[in-house]
Length: 324
Length: 293
Image (cartoon, rainbow over all chains, first blue to last red):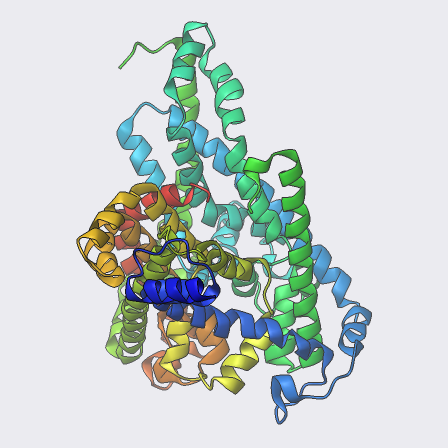
């Protein structure tokens, strides 16, 4: 006892001398400036992330404004029954999952292709210029992208229809036909992100050991074989990390994109409604807290379970490539 | 350079064609908006949008700058939120990264897990919305625009990875022996040595603020607080946007379609002009971030 008090006193007097002291409070005292420096960030994440996590109780309540998030009366699973029996749950789950799967696959595929091709280019200026041009959409807001899409596809004045009528064909009403959007949405997703993704892959390629390439070349492998048997396999770790991050978000829809490109278009609703747009509409447009909170919690839990399973599988297969 | 073999030449041609095609697809839609914003209303109504309009006119831009208060105000809000928000975000993120980088902080892994966990699970939209509106009373304040997107866990972890990878512990140790306090080490040694990573992460944060339309859509009803992108969204999505824009009675000869395009250009032009110059910071940021940790 006495010695412990002694070391404690010593560590207060001169924290630098004492490295073996244990105990939570002692550690805080020893590095109090450092822990204080973490406080702003900690407070922010407690307020804006952890308190809302506790707020998921609202999904089991009949919310009213007077009693608020934590005071409203409990109603058990009624909100979930309502959400799952509305017929919407399966539709938005399916849409979110399918769109995101296509987005992810297309994004990775085109990012790899462009990065590999840029890496094999000889002209420095063309290399730089094309990278800059590819990066342009990344800097545009989805509001601006929506304006661009509208200008291409609107029925009366859109570029597509002026070309079609110009060559004597009938105009197409894209905004009232669902089938086109299965292609347009992935297209603009890749359009906006491929500049970013290709830079990511390119930075991985730049880090590769050139001696392996030299050796392959001496052994007579042509450039296509070098890409096929060196570059592509070496990109596997990067791809697994990106795939994992993508799978972790596979139930989290691209709200920005869907809301800006489709908006509240009733005709396209069934084909393009995702969990995020449903939750948003229920909360803001129809003030339906039951539907919105049940849908939101359903999404969060689904995301959490999927990322845990995916990470666990990767961990079992190759520990180094797991996210955590 | 080494002598190119025939297979390398073929690869080169393929690369030029495919990458060139993709680069073209990336800019052409934007180019169409730009070029048609200079088209006369008449030629849009009769011929639709085109790659090269038959009649050029500056009517739409005249109209935008006839009473530019709304756009200028929106620019003001956006510039303030972007500048101030990015500065605060960068400083505090860097500080947190520094704490998690210091090896003598015993709970540094617990701290990073505390941050990382928020990316695995979250409460969803409803509790977040109610918290901001009902508990924090941030609706219709500038604070919600600043706070809603202020910190990003991945950015903080990227900054920490950068410190781990480029600042040897001995640097901190020797400063401590010289008697520098923890904050002083941060301010006088760590910050000056982290400029490249801070520039990169700062750019990502700034772009997030600049392009944010979601926060104002959720939490701002006061028109004087509308930032740029939300103003653009409001104007594009409302039926009588032109009279809104110029605060006047709609006239028949108003350049309606080209005005939309001109407004899109006025709202996005600066960033398109600027990005080739700051692009290298984004590339840097992606490269730093690619190192998993």
